[in-house]
Image 1 (tube, helix red, strand yellow):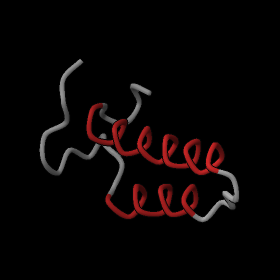
Image 2 (cartoon, helix red, strand yellow):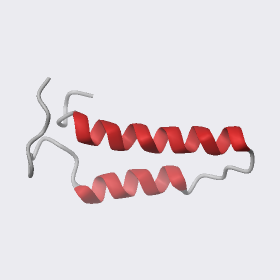
Image 3 (spheres, helix red, strand yellow):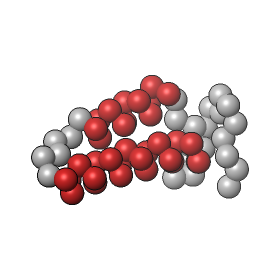
Image 4 (cartoon, one colour):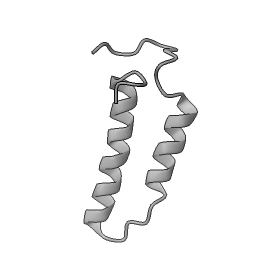
Length: 57
């Protein structure tokens, strides 16, 4: 698996990443465990965007 290069069209766009992370972070998290779960999901989205080109998820 190769890391995406700058402007790699196979990877998600900055707007797609922003939208996905924003949707996750907008979820309600009134308990610490739920907040941790939300942050973990957002982190996974960012890590995936940095590590994998589109189509290899």
